[in-house]
Image (tube, rainbow, N blue to C red; front, side, top):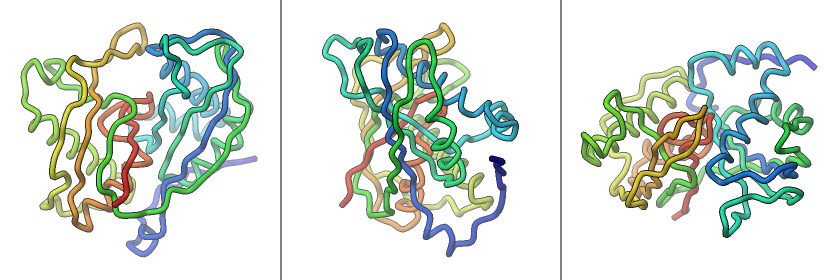
Length: 247
């Protein structure tokens, strides 16, 4: 089957009909996996599926927003080690319907030395009024001078996260929105110390964050969009996956 990646401008009418697609991916473990290694192991599965097709291999290799995000395996083990020969699930979300259909067809066949995909179930997350969001995997903000707490305030971090999310939105819909609106009314860091996650033999520092979402139309549109893309940076590596509470 051939696939085509389309880059087009979405009209407002089309946007209002678009929803986040969530794929519930059930997997079987071939080896034990420590919790800090989980995201990069899931990355292997997803990356393997993308390189099955030349267009999506190019998409994978391009330095651009990927518009998908995913979380950790669940249920979580008490000793923080996922067990060989057990079955777990992770969620993969995207705002790109064509990409979701590609994953359904190609990810189902994937396995690595550690993980084998068993089933994939698709659901649609409808656009509703979001009261608050919280991160399931750590949000990452890559400053030139390192982890943000060493040199900046939470206000600087919030500005960085907001700007990044608006850039994703503008890129996906090929537009430039008026940024003069309130996105969050409150933000709080859950963890006392930065959360370290392994990626390419280094530790990436991030944070679990709770956000109260502003009650205006543009904020609601952008946060509903973020349910699929994730927040912060390195979303296609598993960082910044968020859950939500509807009003």
